[in-house]
Amino acid sequence: MIQDHKVTTFYTAPTAIRSLIKLGPDLPKQYDLSSLRLLGSVGEPINPEAWMWYYTTVGQSRCPLVDTWWQTETGAHMIAPTPGAVMLKPGSCTLPLPGIKAGIVDEAGHDVPVGKGGFLVIKRPFPSLARTLWGDPERFRNTYFPEELGGKYYLAGDSAHRDADGYFWIMGRIDDVLTVSGHRLGTMEIESALVASPLVAEAAVVGKPDEIKTEAIVAFVVLKGARPKAEDAHRIVQELRNWVSQEIGPIARPDEIRFGDNLPKTRSGKIMRRLLRTLARDEEITQDVSTLENPAILEQLKQAVA
Image (cartoon, rainbow, N blue to C red; front, side):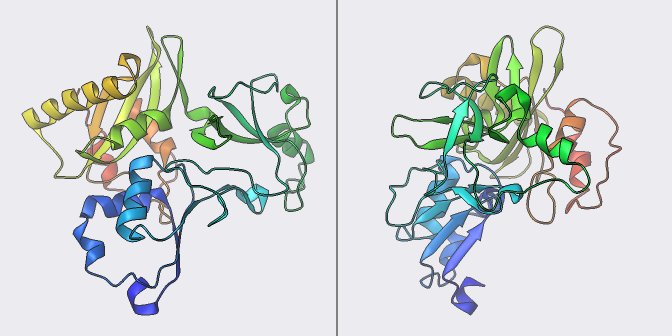
């Protein structure tokens, strides 16, 4: 499409980028991408490795990469770099746009220190904010302006931290934070560590109940090569566990790793994490899978290696 229609702006999801990475760096080189002037990322946090690949291989290191954080409910972009005006950092959505006052708070609504994770909130009203839920204004207030935070901050449902430059780093959904032996771990952090391995094209991490550790870490992994079997699978599991230990620490080592040719995704490219949670718990899938692009992949991911 870029070559045939001289596309200038390419806006896509990290999931699509990681799928391209799996196909290899030679694929983009087969096409004329010289018309591109701007790249965008949307839909979920983008890990630094995917960011760099997208920037260098697709954008040929000359197109600004705008990683945008926003939601349907916000009606507009909230945190994103203004191309040419804001310095980029791979993996960060950078700074709030003019007029947007974003913050990171704890469970009581108090600002957290730099570098510490917390709830991402918007502290002041903005014109495009959703006003209510049809026929249920009370649910709207409870969901987006909870009393626990004083009823005055818009709660996005995402966790994030901010670095010394004030840049925002999205860690994932609030319910995607795992409690492992008393430690709070963001699934995005573990996924990013896995994807940083030269073996891995894509990864998704979920938790499942564990009597000793509260939650056990289950990783669903797509390798850059073929799906491993038997001894190969056990060897790669051990290699990836050791890799995560080095990148984050022993506490983040996945308890279980499952391999697939792909991850369950909607046709728009979003990973269906609720299905992965069901698979991790070895429960029967009763949810609607009609929007799933690749339902056959569920059978592969039911099989645990270790």
